[in-house]
Length: 356
Ligand code: IPM
Ligand code: MG
Image (tube, rainbow, N blue to C red; front, side, top):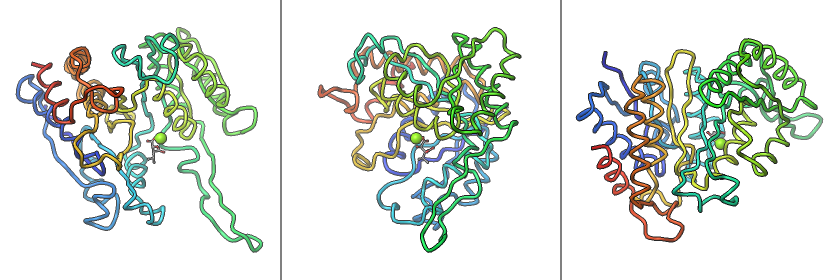
């Protein structure tokens, strides 16, 4: 059955990197029997510029109907002065919650060809392969009440850190299931020594763990987890944590690999539908220059093939092709460590050539 992919290029370098990922999808359509239709829609600042809002109803409806969504990046200085409620980032948060994409998979994998790019010593990161699973539709990002109001003659800001048992349970299951497919170790990160909500988190994860006796469960406070990620990152296999802690720890983990331009992500609902995007942002400083690294977006296509399009075979081929172009010495500026680099299009060409 033909599956449908909605492509949301977004802002900044988004359209440039998505164009290359789209070429990869089209190549797979033409030469490897991938049966998908591709459609595009507006999101983020691009949508604000033409419709006044970051997530137009039409885009949301198309995203709801699609089997998978490929997103470039949103945001940029042009829209920073807007009220927080209509900024480009709101589109991302809206898509995540409206599509119920509660499980965010953020792998941090070090490509041996790029070991020199890490900010840690090579021996600490050689072979690094960890997976952060971030809860994406709850926690302090979405808790009510929220806002800034006037109390006793001064402004007071409030956000609410809230998780229900069922929200914790479903992300815990996602964590254990992912660990079962890897090295069978799951570390749940919380702040149970201070925050009641994460005390509940710890209790529920522990309870769910009884259903997965083959997975070794550990718990870590988030401050310690931040330290351990820098001290000895290879101790981790899968990390499962809440929305805000996951946001912070996944940036730190990405930097261990030295190349945020290489890391894909998947945001999944309970039925295998997903939104796929590179971990990096819209990089307004280089937007329009055609020099951005498209590999994170191309690797996001691989995750899409695996998790939403049931084509693990093609996912492997794409991942292998990325390894091949790195072996061949192709580097975009972000991973070139000052050496010669190729542009976005040339990197796309190289991946497609490696797929042949
Ligand atoms: C991320 C980003 C987003 C987040 C922003 C752009 C809203 O930092 O996907 O990690 O905080 O979730
Ligand atoms: Mg982030």
